[in-house]
Length: 380
Ligand SMILES: [Zn+2]
Image 1 (tube, rainbow, N blue to C red):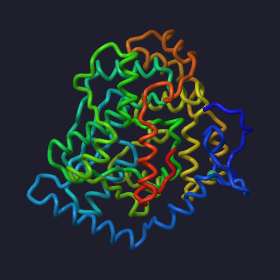
Image 2: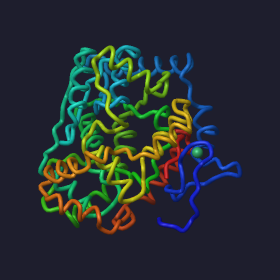
Image 3: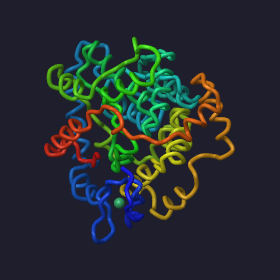
Image 4: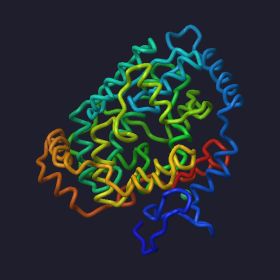
């Protein structure tokens, strides 16, 4: 929601009023910082206590997977979190995961390389799900035309829906997820990054702006997986990275040395679409810079200083010389002209509220999760 609020930036991290719901205390600390110290830190154990808990979980997973080829499903993008997760699952937890990769058409060369290196290096099995590109393209264009900030929804939705559907169809009881407090304790507000799992919103935008039916595109509603899959089908999601020391730079260094893994410029930039969208489209069209949340997470977990974060955020994430190239790449892949893509960039901005959505129900769900202590990060 656009408001007339004066600009303010947190005195501890670098979150600011570009998140219109942010609240500051008398010291100038934001609610993400206070939530980190009050709710996350006291419940986050990466010492022997965390390790013991992780081993207990590993035993449960092994028991559930007895007699099966694989005891759990592990989603991988080729980024640092999911790559390190594969290492932890195999080497620390002693699991036999089936590594699951969804190719939604935007993989960078590094992403493909990294998935191969990790799978081979750890001796794991890989299943790759390829999303029908004609449908993906149609849905992606519909989101561009809807003028919403969350253009990453088609890709993110495909990633998680394909994974969950496969898990249910093949009787898996556990999904390992690379989500973690270390690099994500400051969540991007839904204003910047709306819930990709809100199927009602996805369908409404596609109904208005899409041109072909989604026949094979993986679709899964947030309530289906949060309630039906979890409590009726017994499918559990585990986040192992929250139980081990996870320092991003060290993890990357290990992956490079041990597996020949290739680093990329910033979080999520293993997808060429995401690099363009988060690095250029979102900051220049909407004023939302996701690095603000990513860097703030690293500040709170002692992996970056506030001064360094301020210095880096002052420069664009994007190399100005490659903007034209990427405009052409994205437009060509979407079968539109560069001029059409530029016209979309100039179009009037909308929000998720301009389309049908399940935000009210999602907020009730988030409140329940938070009250039960199942989710500790701020979600708004
Ligand atoms: Zn803060």
